[in-house]
Image 1 (spheres, rainbow, N blue to C red):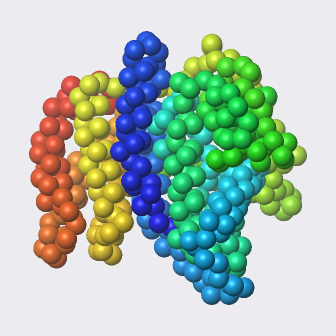
Image 2 (image 1 turned 180 degrees about the vertical axis):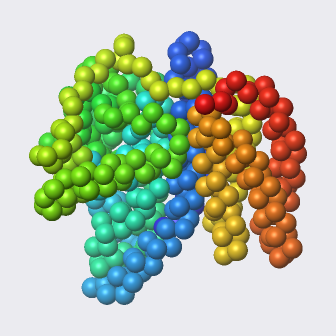
Length: 403
């Protein structure tokens, strides 16, 4: 679906993250860690990239169902607009809740919860495959004759709203929290404290949680992440880890009903013939977060390459088929290398150099075909120039880039 509203929100995302960083610096608290924040952003870029591809599928399915609509509702009607807002927010609650209660849906959604920090960058840590799981929830609006553009607008508004609630800076907001989702509510949702698990699913409104018994107020300090920490900066592993867990469990369990249950039951459920999930206790004062050391040259390198990757990704909305075919693999390759470099994998340096060569070659192909993609030559030149700095950055970070 159309994500132009999200694209317009990027400058505000950057501004608010900068303000949060400034607040943390002034207060002398550490809200951000470079590897975690960069992985959050990498997951977000990957999600937007997959969304540019899978969004066509969502639009195609919605448009096909729209052909069988009972009638057509005027998109400019304020009543239709309000009704669509309430419906989208209501089904977001149920999609979100079922994404925690049904294992195969959790496999897609888990990415958003893997960060052990809680800041505005975490809001951008989005999953790659849930663009497809959303679709069935919105099809009733197609039968009612609501245009896909109006639905996409409300979905984008919901995502934009939920950005600012990913913060520890804003503590309480008084009566506002009675009706609307707020940082206090969403901190609880991201916490792995036993009393906070599976609470506060709301998007813009928190009333659905109050109505359906999933509301919980923040009382004790939150510990963030997942009950089984991922312990990795690899964005591909982040999206695949639960799928692998389900495949392994369904292969090992004996009864076919349990094989099916692995996919359809709660993520906390285990087949009787497999080990149960161990209970977990958390204490914010003693929790040890996954971390890896980085040097300044490595951070500069990763930051520069990530900005280039974001620049390419932002151009996909108006790209040709050839541009998408060349750009998407390079974007995903770049995100893959981010995790490898942060985790000091031996293969990461060679893979990064190979990616830069492929980037320059792809830009040459596009230029030869008369591509109108903006900045294509600039990106190629910058990539080539940065490639010359890689050996120096590697030498200075050599001790950190060994397994």
